[in-house]
Image (cartoon, rainbow, N blue to C red):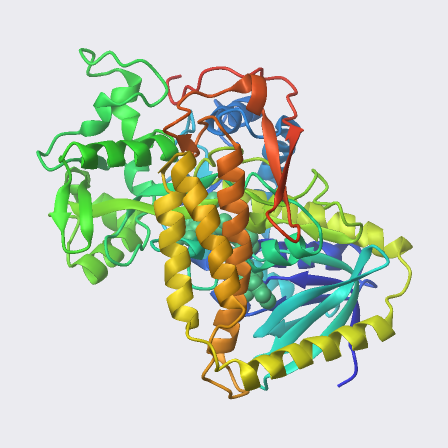
Length: 586
Ligand SMILES: Cc1cc2nc3c(=O)[nH]c(=O)nc-3n(C[C@H](O)[C@H](O)[C@H](O)COP(=O)(O)OP(=O)(O)OC[C@H]3O[C@@H](n4cnc5c(N)ncnc54)[C@H](O)[C@@H]3O)c2cc1C
C-alpha cells in the first residue's frame, strides 16, 4: 500500500473527532476527510458520558449566567473569550444534535428537559436519561455515515506526527489487525484523542485514555497548557472507579459519612453557610458544589477518621433512597444498573459506597479559540485540547458541549487551512514510514532484553503521580514525582516486550501508550511543581492561597532534551474580574 493522502486527517473518532468530520463534510464536500481511531469509533470514551451537556435553553437562564458559572467554577483561570464562544454556540449545537436524531429527554409538556449540575446556578444540563454520551456519539456516528467524503481507519494506532517545513504532513500509524506500519498524508491534522486519566491508578477513564494526542503534540514542539489541573470526581465506585454520575446528586442524592452525617455542610464550598437556616440555598444544594471542593472534603473526612473502611479503601455513602424507585428508574437508570452490578447495592433501598476518583484533565494541547495550535496546520479539540474553558476546575456537563463547539471550530479552521496549503511531501512521508517500521521491528526483536515489563512500569508511574501529584500536593511530593518519572523514562528505554506477534499486539500498543503517559505525567508533575499557589483542583499544602498577582496565568510546558521548560501566558479577562468563588445561590 502506497501512502494514502487526504486533505484533513482527524485523529480520534469520539465526540470531538466525529463532530469535526461532519462539519468539514458539510462545509465543503470536495475536502477529503479521514478519521483514524485506535478503537471502533463507538467505543471512544464519549460513549461512557452519563449526566449530560450544558447549554442555555430555559427562559430564566442566560448566556452570561452560564459564562459566569463556568468562569467562577474554573477559579478564574478559564479564558473568558473562549467561554463566551462556548456558551453562545452551545444552544445551536444542541439543537443541531436534536435535528440529527439525538433523543434528548423531555418534560411532560414536550419541552427539552434540563437537570441541575454541580456549580451551575440553574438547571441547564440537557440529558438523554443517564446515557447522554452514548446517544450523542451514536447520533454523530450515524450522521457521519451520510457523507462520502469521510473515510475511516478503524483500529489504527497513530504512533507519530510527521512534521516537515514547520507544518504537519500526516501521521504514522499501525494497522492493528495486520501489524503493518503505514504513513497517511494530510495537509491538516486535527487531534481529537481525548484525555489521559489513565496516568493515575484509580480513574473513571476507559483504558484507551492515555494522552496519546497530547504526547504527539508535545513531541512536535507544541506546548501542553495547564497540565497541573487534574479533576477528581467525588463519586466513583470503590474497586473499579466506575463513575456514579453527578446527575445522581442533581436529582437530589446526598453524601453522608460513617455517622450518617451530611458532612458537606461543614465545608466552605464557595459561600458562607448559615447552618441555622434549613432553607439556605447551599444547604439544599451543597452536594452540587464544584467537584474540586467536594473531593477535597472527602480527603478531610478521611483524615478525621469519618469515612468507612472497605475492602477497596475508604468510602462515604451516596444516599438516593429518599428519591423513590420511580425517579431512580426513570431519571438515572444506569446509576441503579451500575450499583447493582458492580457493588451489589440497589440504590432504591440502600446507599451506594463512593470515593474520589480521577476523572478529567483540564489541561491539554494549547489552542486558541479557533482550535489552532502553535504549529500551522495542526488543530486540536475535545478533552485533549486546552482552549481553555475549564481553567482550574471544569464544571460537569461542559465537556460534551465543548467537544461539539470546538470540534466544529477546529473543522472550520482546518478547512480554511487546506484551501491555501501546499501539497504534502510524499518523500518525507515514505521516509518517516520506514523509520517508524524500523523502530517497531527493532523493538519487537530486541525488546525482550530488559528487566521491566510494561505493566510494571505503568503501575509505578500511576503510584508516583497519585502520591506526588494527587488531590493535595507540596514541593517535596512533586519533586519526588518529577524525579521518579525521569527515572522511569530511562527504564522505559529497555522495557521488555514478550509478544512478537503482528496481529492485535496489545503489549506493543500498551508500550507506546506508556511512552505517551510518561510524557504527559512529566508535564503534569513539572507544571504542578512550578505553580506555587492553590487554585481549583491544584491544592498546594505549602502554598494554600490563590495568588492572582503571580499566577493568574496559564502554564505552558514545552518538551526539551532535559526537563520540560515551563512558560506562562496571561488569562484572557473580558467582562468578569477575578473574585471569590460562589455558586448555586441565586
Ligand atoms: C465515565 C465518564 C462520564 C462522563 N460524563 C460526562 C458528562 O455527563 N458530561 C460531560 O460534559 N462530560 C462527561 N465526561 C467527560 C467527557 O465525556 C469527555 O471529556 C469527552 O467525551 C471526550 O471526548 P473526546 O472526543 O475529546 O475524546 P474521546 O471520546 O475519548 O475519543 C478519543 C478518540 O481518540 C482516539 N485515539 C486516541 N489515541 C489514539 C491513537 N494513538 N491513535 C488513534 N486513535 C487514537 C480514540 O480511539 C477515540 O476515538 C465523562 C467522562 C467519563 C470518563
